[in-house]
Image 1 (cartoon, helix red, strand yellow):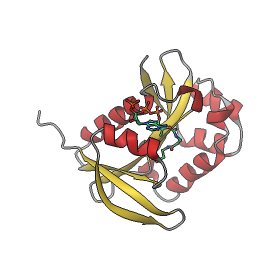
Image 2 (cartoon, rainbow, N blue to C red; image 1 turned 60 degrees about the vertical axis):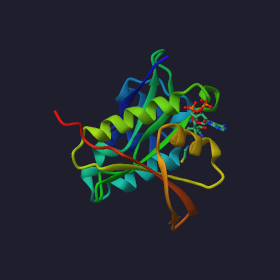
Image 3 (cartoon, rainbow, N blue to C red; image 1 turned 135 degrees about the vertical axis):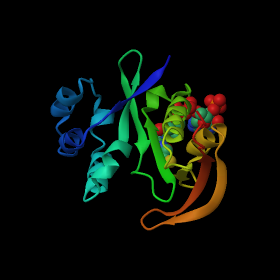
Length: 168
Ligand SMILES: CC(C)(COP(=O)(O)OP(=O)(O)OC[C@H]1O[C@@H](n2cnc3c(N)ncnc32)[C@H](O)[C@@H]1OP(=O)(O)O)[C@@H](O)C(=O)NCCC(=O)NCCS
């Protein structure tokens, strides 16, 4: 079963941050489960990333859509490249885990980063107790970098994967 990423516009983030799943569905044409739509904290975070930084709009969370049409998670970046780096994030609905979907999505995101000359590497920041996520990035060929101290969540592990743009 394959996955694709569907872009979510700022208007969709606004609707979902307001708890308006119906508007989110109308704007995207996607059928959203409460698990996906009601993650208000994520949608509000996307809006904060857009404040004064419209260039981030192309580098935010997207919907993960199975070839059945089911929306099974969210994945994307946490803003436009800074210093040659983008940070990725992902989440898969519990009933769809351990089927390789996060791995497939990471490859899509790394592929997108590779096509962008401004990006030299992709970073993942992961809580030390999140073995599942560490497994995803390790399997995807990311390598550890020094720990990072998040102002809110404390110590996080960092993993990076270089994304040289292929020579045409
Ligand atoms: C982390 C998460 C996205 C993994 O999604 P997934 O689709 O189940 O991952 P995959 O099936 O692609 O797994 C890839 C590899 O990661 C590792 N892995 C995934 N889930 C794991 C688990 N529960 N325990 C141990 N290893 C795990 C395995 O090495 C796996 O490869 P394998 O199945 O060949 O053994 C999912 O568990 C999730 O959404 N968790 C909550 C949100 C979250 O933690 N997001 C990341 C924040 S940094």
